[in-house]
Each structure stands twice: as structure tokens, then as C-alpha cells.
Length: 111
Length: 116
Image 1 (tube, each protein chain N blue to C red):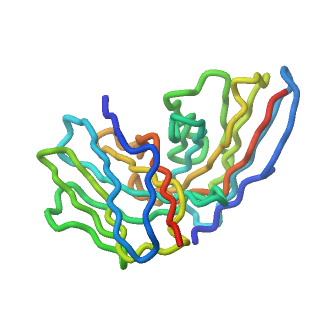
Image 2: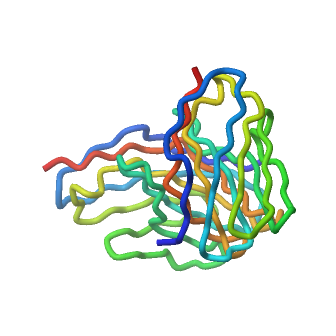
């Protein structure tokens, strides 16, 4: 299994609070991704990174920001959490733009 | 824009039997990859099988095989000798190589239940 961890694994927060999710990899892969999973939608890309300090938006990026200051860490921040951001969040990594391997996921509930 | 469609929201199969999950996709690209991922109740996304579009030979991984029909834009997954541990949601995914970003496009998923 690819060495990918996500923290926290579960979080409950209130509307309007900032939230940061962390993805950590030990594979030294160049590409990292954040997805959200909602019923009926599969997984949808939020943001991705193609190197340290190099990031770009995915299809559902509104309300989210990311940062990557080290190869191994990719942070996803909800600047002001809303109930529509209640979801399961997955991080993925790839050594090239080919096969992606996923972390265990974070279940976020915004009350 | 690329789309991926899984038309079977739920399926069931008896243990030891064979089941086929359907996936169709829409793209104007000629060079791409297709994947099947498995998501068991643990929620972990697990890569099952991968197919490169330029390869005519269908990919196989142990009990899992695909039927890749490029002209028809169809990519079905066959599970042989189904086991209880195959109970999971299965996602078909498409990846284009033209954008150099590695963005995966997922279908909505098919829930498979293997019955004893």
C-alpha cells in the first residue's frame, strides 16, 4: 500500500469556523490531489498539486484553499466551513499523471 | 468534457458466481487511461485494475478482468468466482493524458453485494 495518511480521520465542526485537513505521504510522489465524495456524485476533484508550491483548482474548488510547502504534505483548508461542505475528503498521490493511490479519507461534518 | 456513466446503481451476485459491472464514457481524446476502484465498507479506495487506451489487450488481475471496447467507449469489469470480500462500491474512472494534470473523472459508482 502506498504510504498515505490523512488527519484527522473524523471531524465535527460548526458553520463559519476554519478547518484544515492534512495529507501526508512517504512515497516522495510529485502529484497530490484532494477529492470530495458525496452520494450520487462519485469523487470530485477540489484542488491538486504538481510540485512544492505549485497548485491548481479542480472542478469544485469554491470555498477551499490548499498549500504545499513540502513534498510530503498537502493541506486543504475550508476558510469558513458551511453545511454543504459536509462530506468525505480523500487525498490521492501519483508519481506521474497516471495511477493515483488514495488515503483512508476524512469524514467531515459541519453543523 | 469527459463524462463517465455507471448505469447500475446496485447489483448482487451469489458467492462463487460471475458478475459484470458496466461503465461507459464519453471523450474526444484518443490517449487515456481507464480504472476500476473498489470501496469496501472501510471506505478505503482500492485500485482494482487499469487499462491503457492504446492497448488492445484487455487487462486482467487475478479474478478481475475488463472488457474494453474503445469504439463503443465501454469499459466493463468482470469479477469471477465472487467472494464475500468483493462486497463493495465499485467506481469506474477516466484519466486523460492531454492536460498533464492527472485529473480523474469518476462515475457515480455501483454497489455490489455478494451473497453467501
